[in-house]
Amino acid sequence: MRFRTERDGLLDALSIASRAASGRGASGTSAPSLQLSLHGNHLVVTGSDPDLVIEVRSSVSGDADGTVVAPSRLLVDIVRSFDAGAVTVSSDDDEVRVTSGRAEFTVRTPAVGEMARLSAAGGEGIRLPAALFADGLRQVVRAALADDTRAPQLTGVLMVATDSGLRLVATDSYRLAFRDLPGVSALSPSSEVLVPARALAEIQRLVGSRTDTGKDAEQQPLVFHHGELDAVFDLGEVQVTTRLLRGPFPDYERLLPASYPSSFTAGREEFAAALRRVRLMVRDTKDATTPVRVSFVDGGAELTVLTAETGRASERVDGSFAGDELTVAFNPTYLLDGIEAIRADSITLDVIDSSKPATVRAAEEDEYRYLLMPVRVS
Image (cartoon, rainbow, N blue to C red; front, side):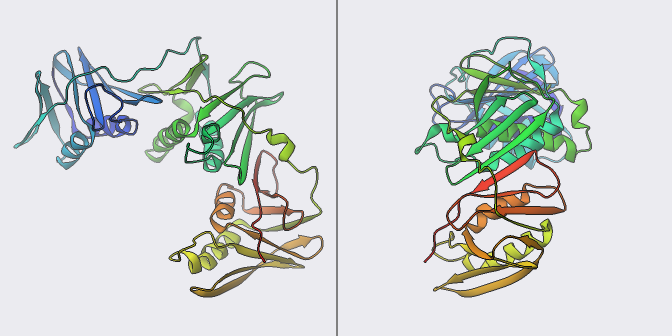
């Protein structure tokens, strides 16, 4: 295999694919690896593990077709070290050579094996509004469970077809987030799929990177289709394939309180800034989950963090409160996650009492909800 391309484009392709690279992806290798396949002037860079495959397609100047498997981290670091300009990549059975300017690297390749592949999802696929879908993921993915040893199904985001469109739901059993996307039709009526949050976080990142570089995300393709076992998100030059999760997802609608007797509304940034400040008291302590006590009173809320190790911090946030005065304690990081997920200028915190779920939402809209269990304190 031999091709020539620009350093920046190659680095992007390698970096994106490497996010799925795993030592489990190619037989005969123990370190994370990438597969580079060249056909004519078309290069496909693939990173994979048994549950996630990312393929990045790019145009290069090809001289000789072929396929090579190379260590992902080393390859990315080599290309990143080059100055902007042309890069030449060539390989034989035992090594891959990467050159740019006067620099030349020869890297021994691991035993070439088949990269992990997932079954192809059927159907023509449905085009999704990229920016809207990614914004929903930004709000919801944060509530999914990160560690799959406790309850693997909670590491996913439930995509549910509703009467009005699509709903995204995630929970780690301590908090729950859902976002409605009216008018988005991604599934057949009354159907649902459970997609790993890890894969959806990559979709969010990829769409977001387009916006950061000045590209119009809505003009970029985002096509979704799924089968019984796998789902595919096709973004044109990047295709993300993931294995669907199995297992019972919580009956989240049962967790949604019918009403709240008390609610507090304040400026989103003012509340978040105060919370970040009082949270400093537990940043370097042994127990970073020390709760923040939120005391709701007429005209505002008092945020307090108290630890035996570092001391006490408190700050009052002005706002409007309706209901009986009460104090509710929360995990400060989880509470901040919910507030930062909202783009509106004002947020509303709906509460029942110190033991039942509270809800964080934008003060003026109903499409996003973030439920959070209080922390019991003596």
